Length: 155
Image (cartoon, rainbow, N blue to C red; front, side, top):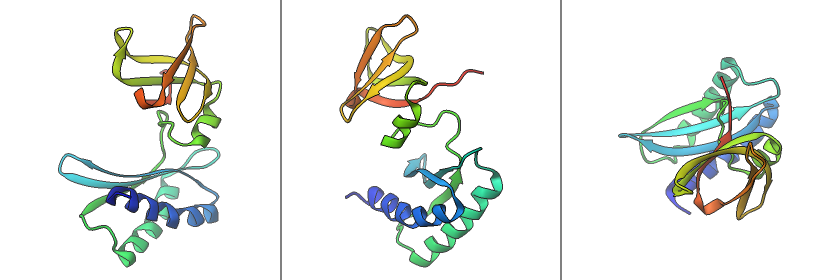
């Protein structure tokens, strides 16, 4: 397990019972470097959506625990937020919740001279994702070829 995975896993283990207490859902935890700064991000959700006060309550408890445990070697910025409209699909529950909905897929490499695809999520497994395009064409993508898959949204 890498250092990043260890940090994410320990943080998830702390957050799961805390979020049950609040009746929130843990969407994801990520420890990433952006520019010269490290970020520890926890994405939370609940029926009807997360409010700023919800994020603040979780952030305070998480921050206190992180200060006490002090297991992250680097200096980092803690963020607790809603996953937002364009939430990436990462876990099984994300795919289950998104079945029948429109998703955007970005590939690492071009396929048919494009990297970006949109369609209705119709099937998935551990190796592939299937979407139906607007013209009814079924497209199957290997998970290993997908850089990002998330719910599509129109403004």
